[in-house]
Length: 326
Image 1 (cartoon, rainbow, N blue to C red):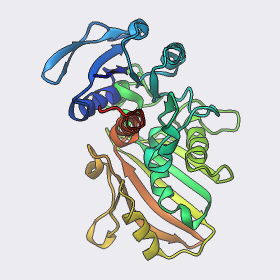
Image 2 (image 1 turned 135 degrees about the vertical axis):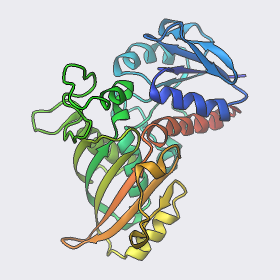
Image 3 (image 1 turned 30 degrees about the vertical axis):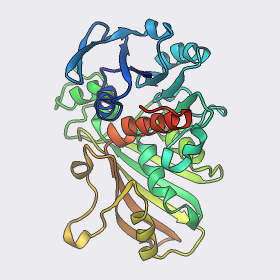
């Protein structure tokens, strides 16, 4: 029996991952780790597990480690686990753009998992965007503009807490301004060029995952007063001539995509309809009248599809390559 560690087990994404592994990793032993939640009792498969301190990660009894924690936690503990030959899946941004670390969405570039001991899990809004774009890759994308509308849960439990305060500057923990009944056009730290760290993730990670280093990407990331479910407006410029029926069929053929494109009947992707699913909803598909480009609206559950489930799919593929049954 293999042992899987969840680091950051009490966070929003950690909770989703616990639920997934409870259902899909019946042959594995699960251990939970954290720093702020040490000693907390967590229900797992009808029994209580105790959250251990991250310092115990190196006790030699772990086969796979899934980090759903901060960059600092990943930076400190992952190198130690790699020295012990543990396979690590990291949801933080710390290793994502390092050349020797595969950044993986399994349905796109899962082959990179083979023979890799450290695999990076992409940013939540990036995952749903590239799943939709990759379905159209044979049409030769040359440029992409993406505007995200990101739920408060993208900032964790503190983000959800902030959503309660209509005018509580003194109470906010995650955001600089109230997100309740508001829209904040700034996510992450601001760079010298005026773009934010979240926007750079969208640019750089999309190119790396799609293996399109010359793809021109323009992005803006916006926080909205929604609990769960990120939305992305994508304008994708293509080298090949656009046929909307062909594009819809290509998206329909992608197993991770739910085509929801019947605007006349009120059918289009929304957070409320994609919540708690592993699918990426794509709809509002139109031809850009200003260029050879297609517009589409892309929606997914940021905690599940955009984080925990993608991490699980990486784990599943890594176990397959190792000849292991989870």
